[in-house]
Image (cartoon, rainbow, N blue to C red):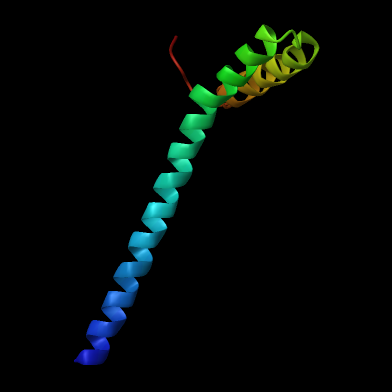
Length: 78
């Protein structure tokens, strides 16, 4: 009985750790995408580094367009 309890506790702890890691990864993607990246671009424009900020902005725009494009064969209503 003690072996079953030990195995169940190890399984539970591993599942909780995996959930925590997945949640932190999603929170960090949200933070970087919505807060940090625009703040860096604004900072680059303010200090006059437009020649660095514009290519970054263009690359981010192209990636957003490609990633947000609907898949072929799906019916999306506009």
